[in-house]
Image 1 (cartoon, rainbow, N blue to C red):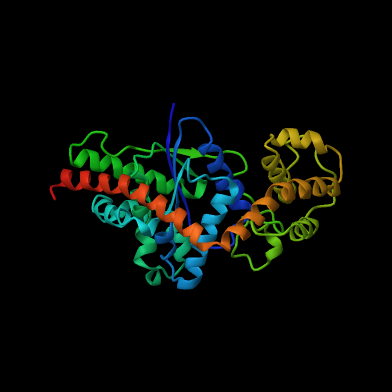
Image 2: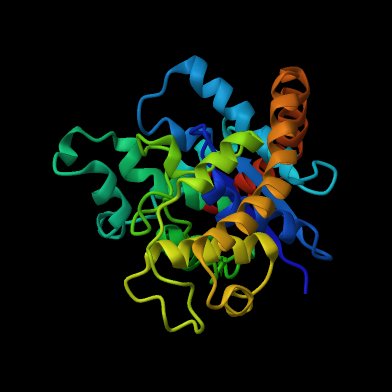
Length: 333
């Protein structure tokens, strides 16, 4: 059965191994499955919910696009564009914002986490950005959306908005109610310095993450210095209690090798961390170094990247603008 897939990545710069394993690697696999129609968006409108340096933002949009392309997302197979080039997203978000309810938004835990204790100083955009996310998805009649656990609640909101719009305007099935595609294995990659914290670009230590632009030498050094414990590697998958760094490194290895965690446990059963680190370094270098080289090459050709985004935006605009026109007709504009 064919799927219409929409997903986006914020252009925050410094994409890392967690972004690759948790999202981009999955995008490539979805693109290459027969009959799937994929739309992949650099969600730059979402990025400005917090203040951005304009020059850095522009570079980050290009870097994220370069990471898409270098990882294997093909503009001939998938639509790749940045959100701000398609005004239908903003227009659709306003209309859907009039359908969404304050109570729904008040339940969004990610706003509470990002706004912190002084939510009065958070931007309105940060509060209502799940409505923009709903517009992103619903304007393309997406049937499936790859999401991490932290975005699952936002997809539920998209489903609520679609159902309420269809009900309020007596338009059954007009807005498609999307299903989540939740990556059950290896969706959360943790810090190399602390296995209890998610790998993040905001961590002050660059040793905590493998960046998608890291060189071979940098990767070797970071895996060498990754936190471990003194015990031998386990013989069963029940031996991970209080060993988060072990679970993380074996998870990364399993994902990069496209094998189950149990297969990796069997491979390293009773061995030392040094054996795992050696093999882990090899497979990350093998997979990430070509991507890193290609990202660096693509970033030197900003015109090529901008052309990919512009051509993708033209395709996206045709779909999204048509949907907005249909929405306007339904609501009486």
